[in-house]
Length: 233
Image 1 (cartoon, rainbow, N blue to C red):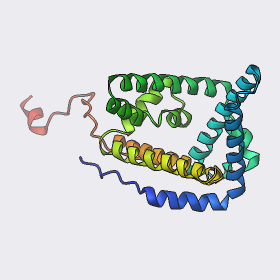
Image 2: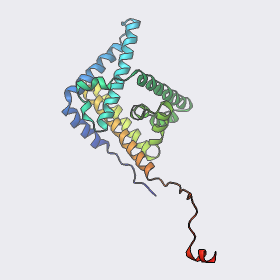
Image 3: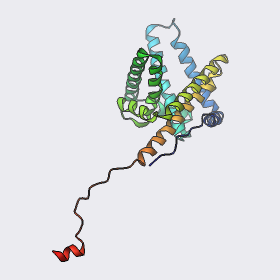
Image 4: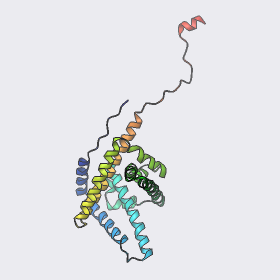
């Protein structure tokens, strides 16, 4: 049984994300400002070592908040786009620790790919690009999150993921070029684009798994004998 080809419109997704950004502009701008402040503080060499460590941890936790926010929105839950919901979006210690493991293992695999050549490194980078979202979405551990990202980006989905990644990076760079202020709008758009693509790929993967042919079970009991066979007996 053949499945329908995967389709995903990057242009339509950006339009939808822009409409969502305008609807919740205050929320997204405040989150963006916090990210900018933490980023500037992390790059400040004059900050003492202990304070620099605290800022680094805070920046990491805030990145997880962004991931969970974009994932919730991609799943259709706009209730998380409020300041009252921020406490729910903060990661637990286990989430932060295992997500760090996901990032570390995927980073090592990507690095191994780049050691071979640039193209293998980029290939592994794209295939594992949804590992973080997969963990937050499925809570299935480090290795299973990497395997899931690998499985949903195979075939022609790889090229869709690569193109979406290039567009997301382009949005980020455009935001920086506009005196850094534009990042307050382009960063949420990039995050939403990636999260919406992950959800689309995940749904497509689930659908393909559901319609996959299943092996026929062997009957537990032997069929009843026909009337003619009964007469012969």
